[in-house]
Length: 491
Image 1 (cartoon, rainbow, N blue to C red):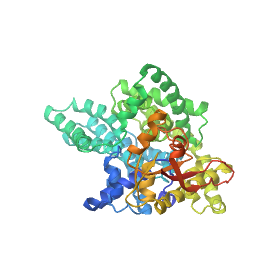
Image 2 (cartoon, helix red, strand yellow):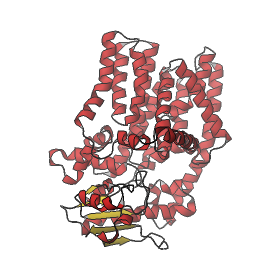
Image 3 (cartoon, helix red, strand yellow):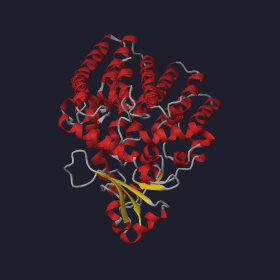
Image 4 (spheres, rainbow, N blue to C red):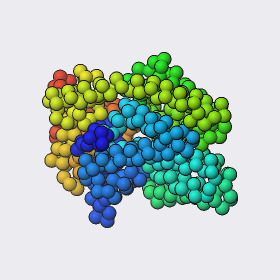
């Protein structure tokens, strides 16, 4: 009930995540054959469909309160799946309940509740898959393997990184009869293959991102990538445990211990260990390390119990044995001690929101993740930008479209079609021509950088005299000489 109270909101939670994309997809799926042309772009999104389909089928596509409630329900079911997985690996009911409580109390868990995001649903499917694989490992039965395969398919159709569940599934299938193994792999792969065959992504997909990053100098890029990823892994781990990006000796020690235990279990072909190893390989190669905190969070409950499982297995005991129980209690206490200061700070920030002059501040992630002195500016910037986006429709005819770095913003808030601009690397002689080739006469630029568009106000800074200003939104503090956003028309 506390989680539902915390997440009950009519706000997006953050403008700078994928929430608007998921909502536009959900609105498209909910509309069926009468789909608005504005939401048709969602049919070509690179994001997997299961989370937006869940929003659409439940009636939450047009109701943010319901969308948040449904997302939170996914977390609570995910906690039940965590309980089931720990029980299947030998933990007692008390130990599983304790770790459920600890994981729910971590800052990375409750901050995600403010967002429209698919991580909660992915947590449910991934932990359910591991629980079923663990049950099959302990008591082989065809039904365990087949249902685990369905859970793996659901996880991959929720987040593409669910492919990391395929290696432990394949290993389990090798122990089964040939017919059962074939059926289980088909159940895991066929829905995903059908989706990618029938669904045509428009614009950059995940493969395009990898090719763009590694294509020219793959070895040099990989060296930089590994250096950056290790830095962000340390920060992301600390952020999920303590709500601070300052990694220290304690968080580093816990992280290294968890990774060492996971590597040991992977070497012994345990499903959870293999899953973490495959997941870590994806994180090391993924060229956008700034996303690591949220990507790390979904595997965190599995990672945090690895040391207890490793010690119990090394001693050839159950995780419910006396020493393992003692270690689990101490481990849970240490994690909770790290989380409690963040909970206290969040309670203070929640109360302070009433005096911020921003009535919706408490519903935004940046209210809690930035320094108190800066949080009003951060939330105000998001609210101002949302207001500017809602006014785009005042100047842009319904049949027209808008060039924007984030087309999903224009789709969701302005209810207008939108296309991305060319990248800043396009040479000047070709740039304006490519802008016009999008077929859009209007252009929206914001004081915002994206991993693929790292220049603020893109593509305004490249448009020159070809651009006529229609709307201008100043920054909330009124001090910056640069506007927060500009809407204009190409001449």
